[in-house]
Length: 188
Length: 91
Image (cartoon, rainbow over all chains, first blue to last red; front, side, top):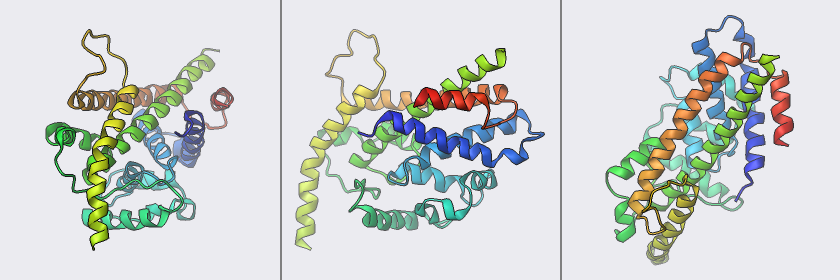
């Protein structure tokens, strides 16, 4: 299990980097826009801290830079120059779901030697007692909550959920400590 | 490809075990609920339901924290004292 500490450090580092990249346009930013920048850079940082090893992180970043997304430019700014991005971001913008699946399969095949294989393509799970509970409304809800959930099934869905929850918790912890520290500093 | 079929069938045999294991890990991650009937025998469906609620809660928290931070950080100055404090706290 990856250490939660290093995950938080990685997240903070990437988050600050993303915020720095948006700093130039900071002068007269409305509070609404500022919130969007903070939230988007936090989400992107959380996803890129996973370095493309999980499906949800790739899907999150792919969605952020998708054609037709209102905050596409902001996301691209946060991600930085294309040379610094993870290779998985090369998923074609606006690709159909099927192509996305094939792509992730290829990337997974390439990385399976080094990294832990997490299968992204839906598996044909024969209905057993427990797998049956994964069918139906609850599974639909879970899939809608996790980025890229529509492409996952069975075991991979639960694995992705676990990783997603861990990352979300790290994100919340770091953001919370930054908020309380800011409050302390502002009080001076 | 017979080897592939063999792999697939053994995969489904393993997957039920895997799912049980994953679900128990998931159960540990979820926040404890002080109900009388929340002993280890909670069903997979219940775990999934709690998981969905927990993820929604976390999403809401991130949103709230972004709101607060956008008010507190008047200028997103990453070199400021706050970032340095956090960094030192995390190390």
